Length: 85
Image 1 (cartoon, helix red, strand yellow):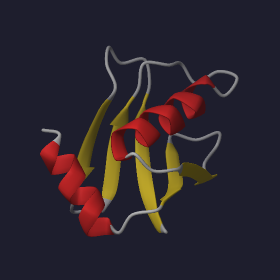
Image 2 (cartoon, rainbow, N blue to C red; image 1 turned 45 degrees about the vertical axis):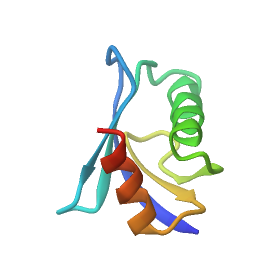
Image 3 (cartoon, rainbow, N blue to C red; image 1 turned 30 degrees about the vertical axis):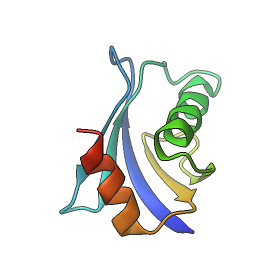
């Protein structure tokens, strides 16, 4: 299990992920608005589809900065992000 830091931007036209290697953070753009858990649901759904692994938000449910757990190592995560570019 790897824990990843996310910085989330809401109300964007499409879902997008970028890797900030310097801060070891995923920059995530989502379409949803941060209301009644809609943004968190979209994050989990899209990251699960993107990485093809279970995703769990472990911190930051009401924040734009979150920590998620994913069953991949950091190198695999970085490789997958680079492949999707």
